Image (cartoon, rainbow, N blue to C red; front, side):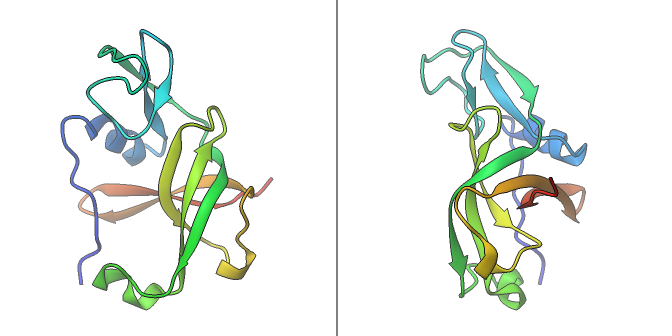
Length: 136
């Protein structure tokens, strides 16, 4: 079965382009300076619509997680149990990524653990960012 992958749109294309180049990018509002993820047409805080795309370090902290025992998509059925988490970016903990936590036994996952981004090409040039325990 084909993997479950996103379909980039006009707002998210720069994010997916960054992933293809193995960098995490997020929008930053030129009016108030706040960063945000997921991409949006306007700033969640001030309503500004002029944005830059900025690169993040690819380091973060696990904010919360769950262990999935029943795959939400058939392509993931052979991977249960797996961990889905919310990762807070090192540069700004209000910037969070909903993602899978990889290369870690689900029993070893803990809120607050340090993580690094891990890029994997899934299909047709779509590179997905996952996160794994930090090597540092």
